[in-house]
Image (cartoon, rainbow, N blue to C red; front, side, top):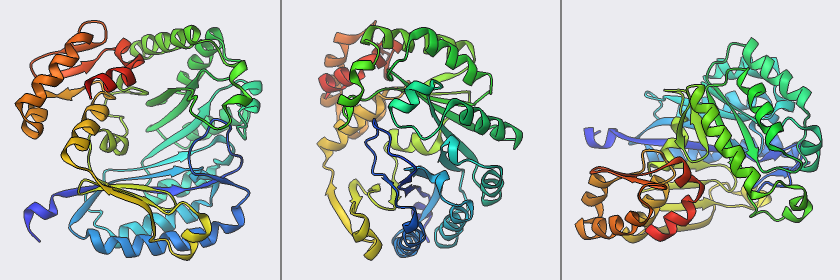
Length: 373
């Protein structure tokens, strides 16, 4: 094996599509009330892992991420089994991180013990809100009491590397309540926090849009969040993500840094050799043949360039101009700088080496990205 080939790294994403309920704001490929199919799904997933691994013998796996759906919904032993199958079939000698998304209602002491035994190094807990009325409105399958029980368990079991997800702009949310809830979450000392604005690009938005706070109030939540987390020592390293130093999500950073990753499971996406592919999305079809693709396309230089701008601007580090010039040429870099200068100061910081978004820039990053592309 040549030195060049063995230095190639890959992140693995594993999709666990099962949920207790499907939240009304969710756009991911998930299924409620299909739990009886879990054993069949895991069998199909293991078949996919074994078969696909043969194509990637020259890669070293650096991260594994269990997303969903609700990975904590299925038995801990099944997660352990999947990790073992990955370790048996892929080169995991330099594996840095295994992360798992969890929900408060399905997290138990037993599962947390199995996760540690299986080699999981990082937990992400879907909190979203501590308001009972809000949780009910968006069909979250838990209440605040369940969230506190899960957080207590995580702390008791000695997890340091864990994060919480929260959403700004949910029904009945107020600025005062958001501030209080943030303090409550911080009292558990998470090392990571993801805080997203509620997406209006969801099929069921009409069910709750009228109960959501106005844009001004949501912006006030964001402003309070960045100020408070900075005080607490967090680094705002990606548009919606904050971490104490060294606790960034290594797997998610791969996406934003345009590094290669392999998606396993129904509807999972992969990005390898500048090719983007999506696994089959139909549940029955996946069980019959987990190696089918829904879609696949090769990204040309121009698409890669636009993708690079979009992903780089999601990060506080921004666009590395030296790398950009090497990849796409001086004239493209000149054009990029020309467009970026319109936003200098309030929204973008331009130095010799970088174009980086400010905290205010993150608020309109979609618009900036569109203009720079």
